[in-house]
Length: 136
Image (cartoon, rainbow, N blue to C red; front, side):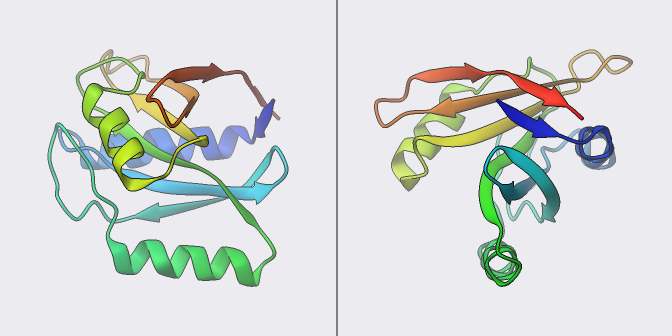
């Protein structure tokens, strides 16, 4: 079970609100199941319906995480008008990019006063597997 600090949950929600109505994105890193670092990454295609992490910023995050001895645990992004569940586009992009059997976190602003956060794995066949997480 992934473990994440309340401050990181709040940071993802704040990031989503700052970019609403467009999707935001970023990377969560740490060791094992413990998420200890949140990296915001620019959405290079600002849109309410999809995200593409800026390749240069994504590479910088990956280098920084490696230098700190961290593992990439999951990508996060927001859905501004739909539930915190991967869309068909999210699934297709994960499979096509090869980022499968990897973690994804989604922040939903569908109910503006009550944002939700959920974690998932997407496998190579495009199956979405919900993951439990603990806020520590």
